[in-house]
Image (tube, rainbow, N blue to C red):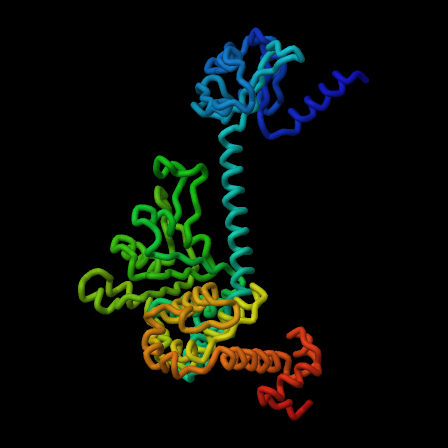
Length: 470
């Protein structure tokens, strides 16, 4: 078998198996090859097409222009939306196909013809719908995997009785299907509570979709929430788009910063809560949805209702159960729990052993934390970067936090010497390392890079007792 014949068989097999249409013309525009898919689309037999000039079969052809421009497959303009008149297709209607057109050259770069690959409208729509379905499945599985690894009431830390009561309330609410409104200051863990409720609910195996109502422009909010049909507006993508409600179907939709939702969208959301169905932008029929709503806000919705900027009927639909988060200043005993957890994560990530100085701890405990845990994490991260990688001290903290404590510290003349400060720091390091290693001297010495005998000497020097169980 000659090489040319072999390649011809491969080409014919490709054209036969493909879902696309293929057509080949010579340099004079005469059709030399066409596959069955294209013949079926045109509604004509192959023997009545081959050998005819292409303009006799497809009057709207652009293949002559392609050859005049000597267009290649990677040139701009090779992809083209090709129109067909009604009398020239099997469907007897005006339609189009997506065409990829390019010239064919011999080894001396002489033009010998041109070829077009056609993706028909119906197949293009099928592909678009398949992509949307795959996108939905991917969103569901990836989001769920991420959430299972990062959420749950076991991650909502705190030892204060008020925090324990909040966790118990969340667990009770999770076993119902009521709408929940979570209120509280920024940085108090509203989204974490929402995710924890979902994880503990019967909807845990379905997606939880989060929407920040204050982060999406008003003109895009409706299409983001409810989706749109193909052709609903100028920039609408082919096949349309699935909205957040459909992505969250059978699961949970978390509406963060619900107080920022514009009034027109409040009306539409109220209808969804009442009717349990949505209507896409550009759509003509309602789509049923089964979604649990959890909303959160830092704003005073009661005041907004009095001002007429938030609908009372929507409020009572959302606030079947209300959970009020607790600002950090109301459970100050948890401040160092969160601070040490943040610092421990940074030490683990960057392989360091940074500690808080006593004065830094005093600062953290005295500050009122208007930004709550989010502000605390930000301050610790910033202080970690500016520290000497040994200890976070007053100079590493923002002045708004450290000034009050700084004024209480004795002047330099009354402070201890540098040598005693270094010794104090060394003793703190040894105590912390012993604690991390359950007071195992051998393990602690290895961690510190010391001989066991030297560690004993330092412990005796700094009056650090040997653990009684060892």
